[in-house]
Length: 423
Image (cartoon, rainbow, N blue to C red; front, side, top):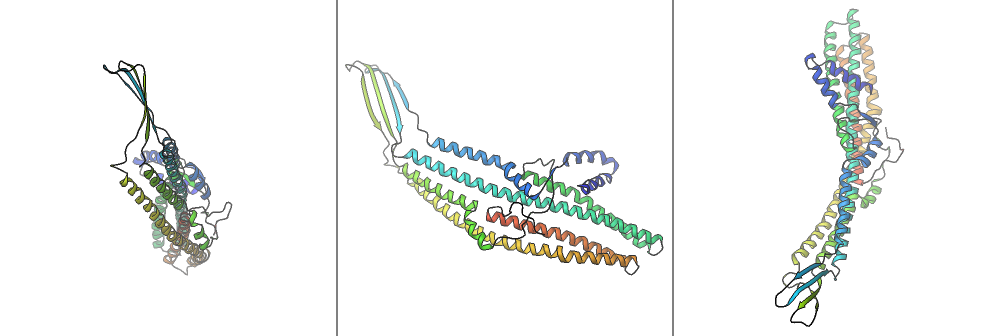
C-alpha cells in the first residue's frame, strides 16, 4: 500500500534528530513487514483454520475422549498375602470388584454425553472465532480507509496551498489566505501522521484471531463482503434451532440426564468376588479354598444428596436452554434490523450525499479561483467532503459489524461463496 509507506516515511522524517535513531529502531520492531494482505473471506477462513483457540478446542476434545476411556475401565483386583503361627502358614487371597448392576455402562454413557457437550462448545467457538475475526478485519479496514482518506485530504491541502500561493504571487489573494492554508496543511499532515500507527494497531488485533504474528500484522485488501440481500427474518428464525449455542444446551441437558442416571445407578453396590487359599494349616488336613462375595450395604447413605444435585443440574440446563433461546431471538431481531438500517445509511451517503458534496466542493473551488468566493468557504467545503467521506466509511463499517452480529446470532455464515459485496 503506497500511501501507507509514504505516510510512515513522513512520520519518521518529522521526528527530532536526537530521537530519530531510537524511533526508527522502535518502528522496525513494532511495525515489522506486514504479511500478505487478506480479504474479508480470507481472514474468516484463516480464523476457522489457524486461530490459536483451535488448539485449546482440540485439547479439550482429547480430554473428553480420555474421560470416556477412563469411565469404561474396570477396577484392579486386590491381592492379599498373610501368615499365622497357629493356623495357615500361608494365606493368599484375591478380590475383584465387579460392577454387576450397570454402573460401568452408565458411567460410559455419561462420559460420552460430556464429550458431546465439548463438541458443542467447539462448534460455538468456531462461530465466535468467525465473528471476532470479522469484526477485527472491519476495524483494520476502517483504520486503513481513514488513513487513506486523511492522506488524500493532506494532499488536497498541499494542492490548495499551491493554488493560493500562485494567486498571492499574482496579487489576487491576500497573504492571510496563504498563512491560513499553511496552518490547515500542517493540521492535515498531523492528522495523517497520527492515522498511520492506528492502522498497525488494528492489524495487530486482527492477527490474534487468524493465528498470525502481531509483530508482523497482515494488511487488509478489498471491501467488506456483506451480501447485497439478506434472507427473510422469518427464514432466519426458523433456522435458529440449529444454532451452536442451542445445540450445546441440548447436549448439556442430555449430559445432565445421564448424570442423574449415573447417580441413581451408583446406589447399587459394587460386588467384590473374593477367593482365599490357605496352605500349611496344622488344623486342616490339606489346602483350604474359601470363595465368597462382599458388598456394601446401602443403609446409611443412598446418595440422596448427589441425586438431588443432579436433578437440580438437569433443571438448570433446561432453564439455561430456554434463556439462551430467548436471548438469541432478541439478538437476531436486533442485528437484522440494524443491518438493514446500516445498509440504507451507507448507500444513501455513498450514492447521494457524497457525490453532491463533492460537486459543491468543486464549484466552490472554481468560484475561489475566479475570485467569487473567499477562502473560508473553500476550507469549509474541503472539510465537509472529508467528513462525509469518513462518514461513508464509518457507515459501511457499522453496517458490516451489524452483519457480523447477525451471523453470530444465526450461528452460521450468511456469506455465499463467490457472492459480490453490496455497494
